[in-house]
Length: 218
Image (cartoon, rainbow, N blue to C red; front, side, top):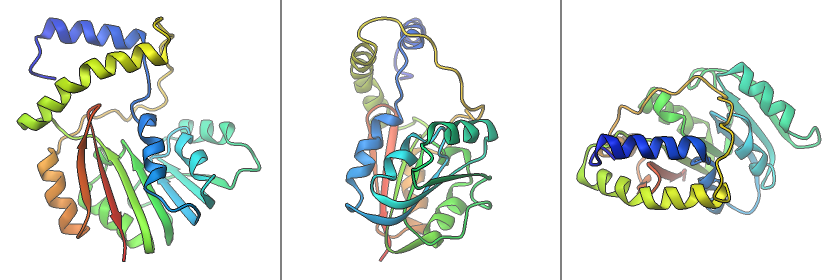
């Protein structure tokens, strides 16, 4: 998006501030399509308010969500039905992650807050044989491909904002977490380090300023 004039960027920021939509939740259904129909256990790292954890509960016998923010973890507990097989822990990743093993590990828009290679090793070591790791992440835009995808995402982003808000301005959402540091790794750096830790990993650039990574443990 850095290819656009600052005046255009400011106008887009104002538009989306009035018509917010959740770019991360947009990938939740895609995440579910990467998983088997039923699994025993799932771990959601950086679970936030638990939206993905609750979706995973339709596939997994038990789901555990981990987040470093006590307030957002408390909110996740409030939003989760008591009968759902979902538990939450306040902990810093990767050191505070439960031991596992897990059949599924997910991490959405949280990895850029964490030590990258160390976190991937922690995910790998907690994944059961035959298990699936799915990451949706944020990278620093640097290459021409990054910028082209960013520009292509702009009209789609506007369309999604209008569709999800029915064309009308919406109240600004309450910030759920203060952990909003920008990504510092580029996508080529992510690919190189991920494949060193997770041979056979499949990283892909995506629209809406995200990348995905899927890895199956043999």
